[in-house]
Length: 68
Image (cartoon, rainbow, N blue to C red):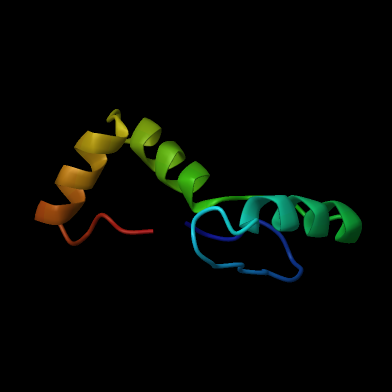
């Protein structure tokens, strides 16, 4: 998926429940950046391909050309 704008790309990772989304939303707000999650990317790709997330996951396991 191509980046649509210019500016920084900040990636935040961590354990489930560690506050990644809360921190990322606040950081995006403070810096005037767009908040975007990998979940959003997967849902958008699945929708574009006419699949649900489970179907996308299964298709990606069979077809290495399906990637973000």
